[in-house]
Image (cartoon, rainbow over all chains, first blue to last red; front, side, top):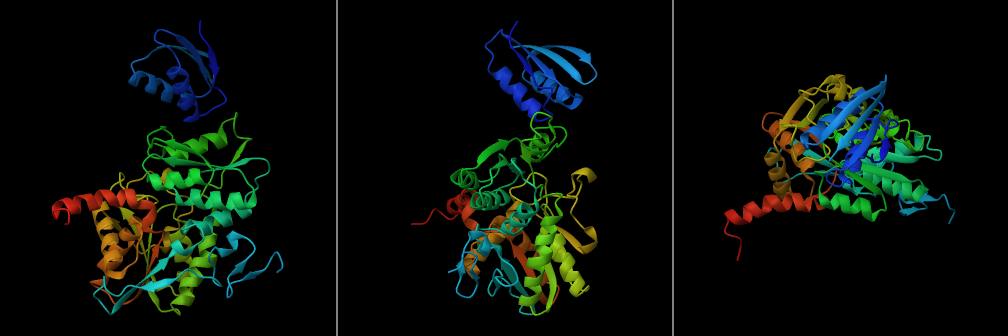
Amino acid sequence: MGETHDLSGFVCPLSKIKATQAVDNLDEGETVTIILGDTDSLKSVAQELKSRDIKLGFEQEDEGRFVLTVTK
Amino acid sequence: MKSTELDHQLRVYSDITQLIAGPQNPTPLVRLNRINPNKDFQIYLKLERYNPFGSVKDRIAAEMLKTLEIGDRTVVEPSSGNTGIALACIANAWGVPVEVVIPEKIPEEKKVMLRFLGVKVTETDDALCPRFPSEGARGLVDALINSPATKDSYVSPNQYENESNVRAHYQTTGPEIWQQTQGKIKYFFAGFGTCGTITGIGRYLKEQNPKIKIIGVEPSSADHKLPGLKRLTGLDEEYIPKILDESVIDDTVEVTDENAYDTAIELARKDGIPVGPTTGAILYVALRYAKLNTGLAVGISPDDAFKYSSFYEHVLRTESQSDGGGI
């Protein structure tokens, strides 16, 4: 399992920028866990990763805390 | 000399920010003699480039910083360049840390100037965030101010919502125009951007004479090359600057990039005044009014041509290709 980036303290678009940076730093096949704190951030990050054809797993820990597992 | 000495006649100052225009130290108002054929509709330009940091934004940057409770925080602001440059210069003079978030599409000259001033500059894609669908720079600053992880480290003047923006023009630019025209002004032209200029000046002039017509200028398309201007038509209510007072606006006219750039170039060639493309847009509308009206008109010229040489170069390249490229 790769690194975890807790971005729950950042709202969109800061969360999107930081999530994108985390994914950019991955090598092909590597996985990273990204924690987001609001639905706008979730939509924005998911949309960005989808546009890059990057796979992600999603789980909602509780209201206002979303865990993404991203594999490049 | 005393450290607080300020003498506009001798032009002695103890601090660069004292050069920012005001009723005792107005920016020039210059009549256009050759570009405008109608002698019964005299057009004057208010040349804001003569502020110390080169644009109309010097006035609002100083007013906003004076009233901002900064504490240990860093000042951050979205800007298409002029506000950022003004904030940076004033913040440097006063020893305040500042960061500027800019749209990618602004001219390189402005980006270089911000870095020259030692400011941390972040470039953003306009479509960065669904919360601010066409204004990534505003979105990013909003996120810095509202994210739990960063909100204690940053403070933003927020020129789109800050009444100091309006007040700066109500207290300085408006009275200057009224004095300089000896109350004879009948038409005032300005662009819509943050809307502080048109609201502050428009409100002041209407209070002096409600018959003065205030005409707002906007780009004909949301995707344009007129930095600092905003197309308000069709914009969702939540993205219209909160400081805009629509009650002072008598007419709104849209202008294409082509008309704005062509007018700015024609002004330089006919009246010898090098202005930015936004002035070209404002003057284009004033010249249209000149075809049907009489009286004294004033247009705001927010800045000069030098910050846009890379933008003008594209237009001039086409011109030199079409005329055979000179000798």
